[in-house]
Length: 549
Image 1: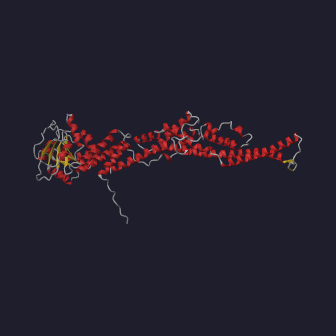
Image 2: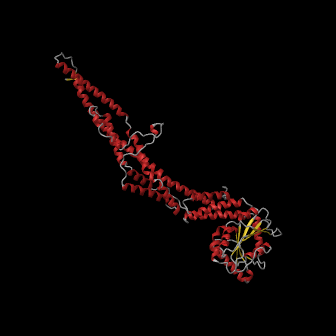
Image 3: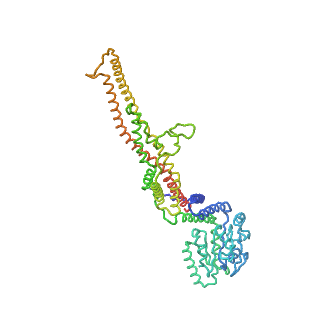
């Protein structure tokens, strides 16, 4: 039997590291706000984890007139907070501590200077730090900012609402709905239920539950209490005692913060687009189109034709009839006219020439406007192919990556052409053999001419002629002279035919080599940057999955 192993949930440290990695990968690609927020959350996790984990910070938050301060006094067992009805009376947060030894640095980090000891008693709340926050709908901006600040820091959020304003849109849209990931550290208390008959209380609770479910807070505890009569306070104390005893609210809050921050990054980075199987640029026709456009812009057809002509030109110079081959030297080499096939110049003072870098541009005609437009279109198609299926920010980043090095593309292609064509002037071995044969034939022809010249001189001087060997009826000097001339011409013609065939073969090899070299340039400068950006997106997605686990 196969044992099914449960997938291990990443630790909080691993999730924070993944969140930071996602933020770093999103830098410059995603909006600044979610990236900065993710970094703030990561810093907050580190700060809170380094403080007292034996204390649970719970905050009472609510609107003006909800009875929040009255509930705070009832839980603390003393009149610590001033109570108002229609006007906000809490201007700064204050803390009530149950067995608060060692909680000082935590409250300093929370910037809560007002602290009261509630004692341990028999309540079972040892380790609780209860905050009374200002009203979130206060007419004073400083009060609202204080609430917003502490809502992001405390371990447990207790939202106090009253029967009249529990459906307030500002509360739900500004606070409760954004806290959908914080269900495990959120409690909602319907206060002042003593003002309603029992059936009305049930209706209010049911309607409040419906609103919370719509906010994404399904399962959040909803308690009915009355700070004035004490109704429901025991249930609230039991809930607080349970949360304090677990000592996990702080980590649950931090985990929820990480999840929320990762969710915001995901929203910014994916726009809600579901994950799709991405195609890499090499899987589409864009690479071939790019190589075709670059080859045309680099003048590869012209270079290939010059390779064939240059091969024939050099073959005639090397294997032609020595009597007339020198005339060929006055014609320019087609490759050298393009500054191709030259020995590469070496940058530096040492090292073999074969390993040097070609310096300077070739003389291949510059690309036309149409060819440049074709290259730009091919580069754009590479970016579009690579970005297919990606959401807006990442698609734009991939397209930009594909274009990021195009300003150096022309020079890189030109260097590739120059380097690749350097081997097109290599001399075949048979040229040397034929050259030796041609010179032997020429020497034979000259020997025959010399013999005939000597015989002519002896006849002119009326001197006795030596016996002259013959081939049939033709003297050997004549055979050597005429045979050498005919043989030299025939060898030259045959060599020219072989050189024509060899030129075509070399041109085909050069065309393949040029296409490969130019294709490599296209991959390095267009496709690989796009693929690197795709890899960044994949790492970003993977990091988000870990952070949201």
